[in-house]
Length: 135
Image (cartoon, rainbow, N blue to C red):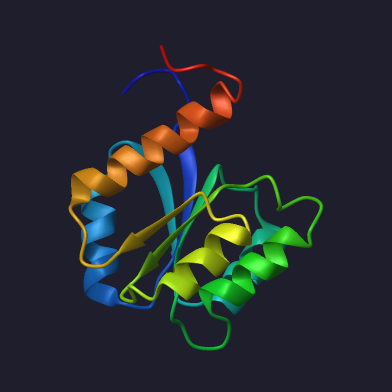
């Protein structure tokens, strides 16, 4: 492992098989924390070191992905954290709402693991070079 600190990712997802898969594909590259719903996610965010990225399901009990995004956007400390939304819904209105609320990506389940890894890496690249111009 490199001396570079692993980027921290908070995953908020209530589908246990998907959590298992996400852990398998992400654990070697990132420091990953899993929570079951948006309410637990907000509580965790208020009492732990902030993650570098949040990956959240759209449909969850107690606080869904849209409500989570709304809470993140209205928080001074959380609003800079990029959020990737995972959804079983191809509803263009939900997708538009999530992106309008600041989600950096909206992926439809099921997705290729490499697609998610690519989105994560692209999100981190955009953060490191927000004004970079593609040549």
